[in-house]
Length: 451
Image (cartoon, rainbow, N blue to C red; front, side, top):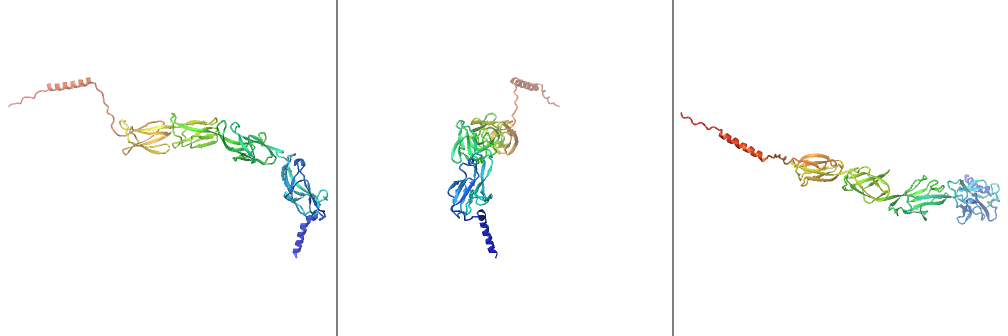
């Protein structure tokens, strides 16, 4: 029994709004009229708010539509957001409002009309009945700029050295630096086209870094800048400009010597430091580096770290350069001699360097081992001769060179004293005299005794 009651209540709920809005249902003569209004002042939107009827024709509010009796239609607001041309105020679509009682008719920009059994016009509006529909907007005060906002797009590349090209909104191309004029409340893209190029006058190489702004907007390494919504002037004199930043680079070639100017082989790595910027290099020829004054540090040569003389700098602010870096490296030689200080060939010497590497050598015909240039610091030479370790000698090439080691072979040199011929003759004559004297004074033996 409850079914028919529910159905009756449902039908009543569906037709009640129509009864409230139009007590004279079915009362308009064909065609029926519906007036759609806007509260936007004409100076703020010349031509009025645009609407599309039934997905087809476009009209401007205020407008009175003529519809066939008992038909239903859609009216879609096209201008859902805009900046007042005169006031600079921001208009955002809020809802379709039924002006008879001020209630929301539809929250969507596309309104579905009631079935057209009556006229909805200002002339026929009676209290809450037969009244027009209003496209209502939320209106807020202007932000920063009014109808037109400006944006300064700058670059750190001097115009005499190169022109940075940008494309605006995927269309027109401009040269930086320039000032763009955008409607309030709009968003745009500015794309850098030449991210790497060679300076026309300096010969420098320019490479892309980022878009940056002093306005508080985060930097981006993308070549395409998405502008903020343009409610403010992003200019040098106001909120802050956007700058397309490039690295300016020159070519660097490095050579290496010891402290006496003798050439050395290149190191395996080194660092260039400028402020908080640190660049690690494993090649020292034809390197493009930023146009800064760099300090050389942490040179790794022959496995030893920090061999550079302190305070050596590389100035790339004026152009490409070749620079010689002095390292703390020294020539090292081991010499093996015998007890007579004569060179000994074929002696095995195992050398342990400061970088913890070891290598075995044999002395040449001059008793020498040429170790070449070695890093600053002590090294150890273990000398082995005829299966015996003669010494494990530790020394520093910066203090002692060559390292001389004696092996126990040969004899010590004989000391010979020079005597004059006169002295020798005198000694000989004295010896002869003594012999003769001994002969003369010798007594003959006594005769034999006869008994």
